[in-house]
Image (cartoon, helix red, strand yellow):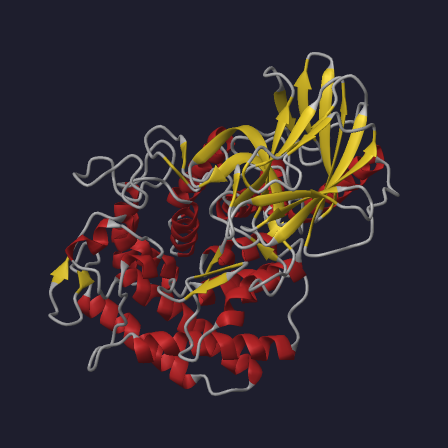
Length: 569
């Protein structure tokens, strides 16, 4: 019962054990910032729901996780888990028993888990109100030692016990109503080899440049691979969720970083990432705030970084999209841009506005402390870049491009006229015209325009960026600010997207030395602390959700670019 490990070991407390295409994972994370003592089988259909608790007999088991295999070890005893497919997990044990128990202890008419013995094939089935799915447990070898709670209602322990004194193997399937009895045509060890080969192929595709000086590339690729789900519910395409912890959605700017990182090696998956939020574009042209299995939220939007992202995506694709794909993309991007021009500009105003910090993606940045409805320079800069992208697309497709170029010039001029104070960009109330400066890195984000900025402005922004640079990277609020909070979300911690956007803009503005330093520090941060949602700017500790895909993608983007520069590319 020994299977060669494939891929990097990773802490199961930080990164769930999952498989490309699956809506399942195995993890101790059972709710936002909530960690159980035992690992659970968790489903992300209809939200994050811990369905089954997986508890080895005794209390001394340790867990070893790799992309291929999850192992509980207790002395000579072993339990191993491998995915037999996106909706099926196989487990086997020798010398160590396992309890498979309903995570919810109480069954009501509207919640909880029911357990019954299926007379068709002798399997036991847990049904979950929370996911609306069934979880069939089929014994493939050995025998159950004990069962409890079969057909029980109300409060009851519902579990299946597998023995520690004889070998056993089971399959757990997630399905809807019925399917044929489970057969095991593929041996457990072969499943491990197949999963290993699949992950190795993905790794070679997305990080062929990796080496000893990019030691986190393998794990970054696993975070992306394992967070990918098959189309289901409102998720219209294969999608990379932001995480298979509690951040199990696709937000309408996060997806851009995943698309760019996947473009060279997984172009079809990358194209799907870029377009998924556009599948839910509303009649006004707005993208949703987020999309997940069972909900599409339109209460906020996200910033229009999609023109910037599309340029990067297309540069990395191994083959150009065909004309039909480009025409569809042009139409969608034009409608999204039109939303900002038509629905987010007050009468007589040249600049669009956010309605809340959430619209910017920087939910609680200090920029918004003096008011929520604001014209900000980051929004203007992103829109200028998007308008220039649309002008290029229009020319490529033989459509009129002048209106896009004229609008880009109008907004760029207004940004410099109305928001630049000579040293820094300010934010402006569109109703009163009152301007306010903050110390947030958000106010420096127009650096993303690169050479499209006047050189003195770009130089001033570069100096401002340097003031945010800690040992570990770019603090979103400088540590000497009175508003700095170590775990303050966008009021201090280091984030991947701001790092990538600033680094790219500095490089295109000619400030390559500073861009190199930002890249180097962020790569070292991920190699030290993994792929957290964000990081403590002073200690480098990972914060919040610890398996965040846009962080992994940002590592891959910066590492790949560094390797190209080192090779003279």
